[in-house]
Amino acid sequence: MKNVFKTIFVLLIFGTSVQAQERINVIEDAYIQGGETVNAALGKTDPLKLMIANSDLGNKYARTSFLKFELPRNIKSAVYIALNVNLKVFQSKDKPNDVLNLEIYSIEDSSWNENEITAFSAPKLGTLLGVSLIPQSNKDGLYTVELKADEFKKLAKDSKKNTITLALVSTKNTISAMAATKEKSLKDSAYLSFE
Image (cartoon, rainbow, N blue to C red; front, side, top):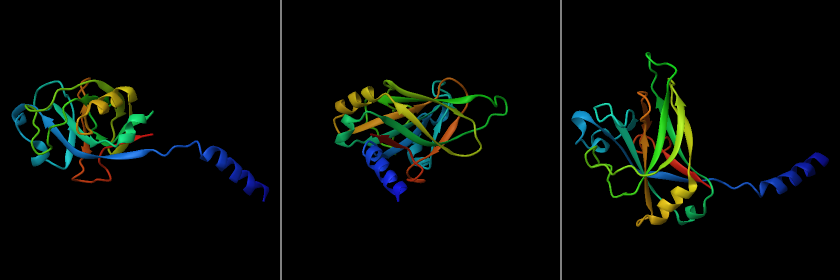
């Protein structure tokens, strides 16, 4: 009986200080690609996956993914904001020890549409909000990238329609990755968490 009261006491003291994280699901997601597909709207023709690789090369293997979120008002008081993305980082026989250098950038212009965005029409990258080094794997994994909360909240404050866009970029190596879109699996698609 003493242990039960001790457990209840501990839960009352520590349970009140734990904040629950809130989740914001992606509302639009698409990737763009260079080369012959520079004018292709891959969010429409290839809507089940997002690709990230060689984002700065400008060739057919240059891929950047875009995520759009509708923000709740209470995010402006958040102290912790993170992007959660379920990724498969493809294995490289030539460079088995390389990792995906995943960079998350803000995008000031959220007027793009997932059925129309192309490499030619994509909005420009803004501020770097977070970076994560992700190892190669033969299966999907959920990765959380903490974002610079102050920079994110500034972008949210400046948003005219309470939407924000993030770009998933990799420029440091040739490792590539794939993620599910909301069309493929809402459960496995990218989301923001905050507290």
